[in-house]
Amino acid sequence: MLQSRSLSPSVMTQEQCTHRNNVQSSEKPQVYKVGIYGWRKRCLYFFVLLLMILILINLALTIWILKVMNFTIDGMGNLRITEKGLKLEGDSEFLQPLYAKEIQSKPGRPLFLQSSKNISVNIVNSNNQLLTQLVTGSSGFKARGKMFEVKSTSGKLLFSADEQEVVVGAERLRVMGAEGAVFSKSVETPHVRAEPFKELRLESPTRSLLMEAPKGIQILAEAGDIQAICRNELRLESKDGEISLDARRIRLMRLPEGKASSTSSSSPGTRQTVYEVCVCPNGRLFLSQAGTGSTCQISNNVCL
Image (cartoon, rainbow, N blue to C red; front, side, top):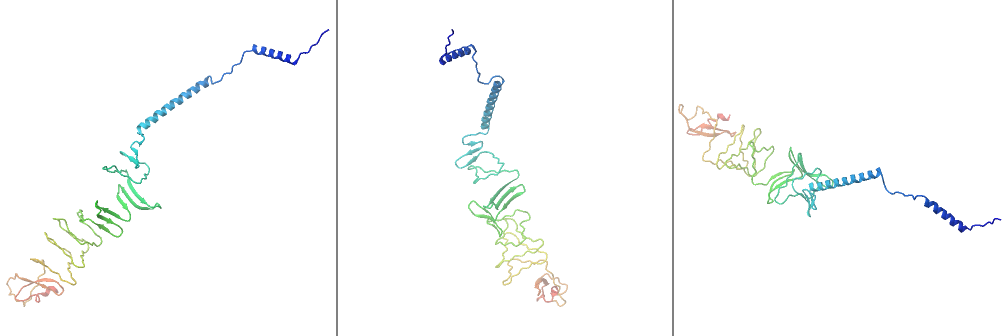
């Protein structure tokens, strides 16, 4: 007679666990590899090596640029940063506009500005309207403004020009041209004098020359002659005073000679070398052969 026996749950569980352990021990353990292998690893090493080479080249170029451009703590190249501003040494070239409050050279050194076309200095107001302009170019020197002044080192005015007048403050105005000075309008001056040992010439080739003064005109030549030459008429006029000719010798050249009439006191056939100066009612002067009396009345045919 068979006897049945029942197994407890705890016993079954222990047997199952023993069997499972035996099965797992009989199999080989599995190993999982971590990382990059094969061609991927070689490509990664290649890119890392290339990056290191580029970093070294970039570093070398940076050091070379710093060496060539002369970068220092105070600035770069000819440019130095000081407490008073920027300091440039040697030749400097600006490709774009330069804005500065003040530009000055070293003490005792000149300031040299050079351009292939022109150099312009403009002064504008708050509305960007041009007030003063200074342009130096190949065509010449141009200045634009309300007034232009030139002063000496002591502050004395040498030259001034505006819309109303031009003032020359120097003690002497010298014109070196062979043709002298040409004035299209009137000239007002208290004194006109030539250089020493040079002649003074006032000339109007196509028009008249008029000299006026409220009190008087003085023409003085201390070491030479005075000549007044004209084509038509030479008039010396004094409205309220007189005209005085004060000289040791007064010569009136090329005066017309009046012919004496038949009632002249001079005997015919005699040669007369003495003349008298006569004046016509219209102011014309002429010569008349002198006689025992005045011969102006009998030789007045020049006045006709």
